[in-house]
Length: 594
Image (cartoon, rainbow, N blue to C red; front, side):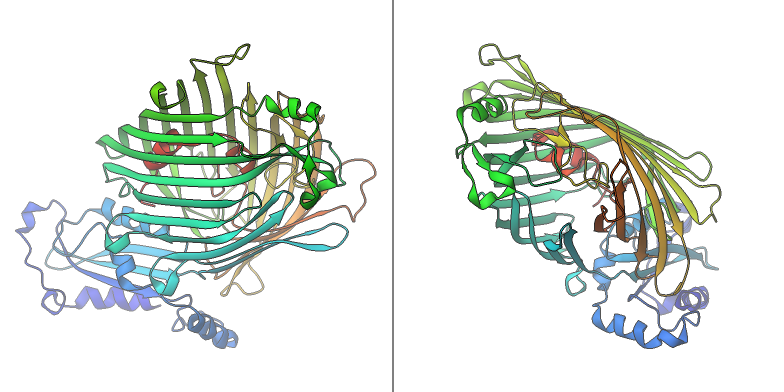
């Protein structure tokens, strides 16, 4: 409602009463100039909106009172235009997309109002999202057990900074600490983030400074990062619902990256070139141990046979590497509603991206090797649907391998494809189809996958069916209900099914699971209405003989894990695959302002 008044206001407000602008002759700008920029940064609810339900007026006011509104300068710093600039609809659309990338903004609308003198008034209208997130993880087996807690404020006192604390304990993992993220430090284009904490095996520390591409108009990106982590890699020995013995390998990994990426070409059709310097160290400071029946505090030294079994994946790494990146980007952004949210505005990238990175180490500083990485992304929009495919492959060539060890090592391939199918833009049903594959060959560093879990078969525990090569298919019908409080929140339901198989590959203790399946249902909520953030509660059952109604898996999650909004690589792959400078190069190449 407030935006309607703003439109009327800016249409009649004399230019002399606004910010003083001394424009150049209008004929120097093909579309005219921007004479005024009006910012309307709303809290979560606009209490002046007559469409809001009067019965809950108190709740709207309470939500706004508990929330700190985004400060105007946080929004202004993302705008790619200012009073006096030439009017360019593309820059308005890019600014809107950059603002929408912030998770604490639920709705963003940037539009222009032509004036009688040939100039334009630009309205920047934003509505905040609920920025305090409480993510509680627990399991229901023989009883209710708390597994983790993450408390985050994504918009600290309205400044766009993020501060969070986390504690997570499941199986061998036991992490706790805090993280901090500050975009555009000092109102510059530089971002800074850090995370510190403790793990069961020691400590963790991560630090990152980056200069991302400024949307599709930026030509430079770069940054530096450093990470150090002590952790246990746990191998599942048997496939069972009951706690089984774990073989634990202690790792200490250090990563340093420094990268610069440059774009060449025109908007939507660009070549990319980048260079990076990295250091990676991977060592095993402790003995191989066994945790009987999953009791990780009672672990003891492993026997010689167990050590021989896992030692094939205990190669040390110590490399200083210079990497080069080349890529091609033919893309355009579109705005859609209700893909990975129910009614939220989302930005999706259409077109193709392809990139290749090669990194040669300096043998005088450690390992003598060549690391290769390739990435592919392709997306199209047939009608009201969206189809996406993406893939990544990694390989390491050792020039001085150990005796009887192949020179090509740690070959990783992962790929997935999604189809968001909708009969019409007004349909309340969205069918999401997914095919996902992950595989590794000749692995010389710790590696093992499982078939169960939130990105596998959701009806099985994450520890079920260990192996080395996995294929999963999923189908999910996301239903928007639209009641009972459409002005306050979006409510929906979902039904889903998964099918997949895992093969042993060369992972220790891997086995062939044969084809397995699970199915389930769940509920989805977005608060406030129109938010892009979805809260899910899911129940899933394995489809096999002897399964009873009580054999379900329960999951609470924030955000959609299955879809483009979720991460491409899941935790099991990220804990094994060396990220290195190639990942950093591609991260900067595709950062697009966030």
